[in-house]
Image: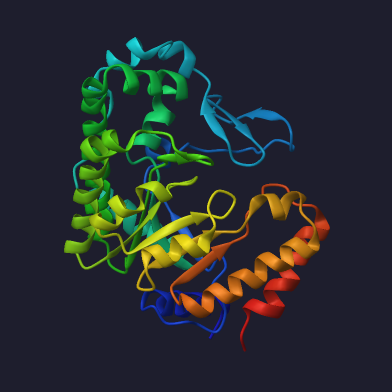
Length: 324
């Protein structure tokens, strides 16, 4: 069995909530449909750490650790009024047919040549608003005229639902990740009542569509969204993402339950600027959690780790998270 097939076998075990021979770390390949619309577009070339570059097409600025934003966002949306006046026809709701389905099938095939292909939809509702409008105009529009802004979210919801329907029809798809940032490091950045009225109903429709096709769904939000966990559990996702820099994984996972999948990003602060001892402690915590939660996957956090830290993480992974 080659390395790619081993990665796929481990991921298949995880989806069955069976503990594989090692804690999966980047055994998957995220595949994205139309990242130019639903994500941040092409982030190349990446500049040196600490600098800001411009993408090849000249449309976006980019940082070394993956930040991307439109160069013309402030010209198009100077304040919340520009957001609320936006023409919704600018945001297409695609037909779930050709060419969407053939593109998705090709992406699955290409991803499967490198690892376990995992469809990833990034700009669902809130995240797409940040991409399209910029943070300040978007948040002001939401705060000042929530009902009008919700009409924009409805268009984003229809578009995301179409993408979810497409992925759910592709052969070989077992798990789909739905990303939408509703929190920052300190907690929710949008009031829970707004989410319950305008955001979570769309999640429920998207999750149900994926489940109706016999697929699983894993919800992703950066930050500390623990205050929304009960609401999210009621919507029935099969798994959750945890950014360890923002939330302690253990208590969150125990609230969610052992029957869930968990995608964990290790503590970026420890990886980037911590000590090898702190990284070793992080690895040991992951080992203990994996004994308790078989549906775990991880990837190494940090955007620019010190060489000795990257080495410490790899040594710790090989010593404690590989079980054979």
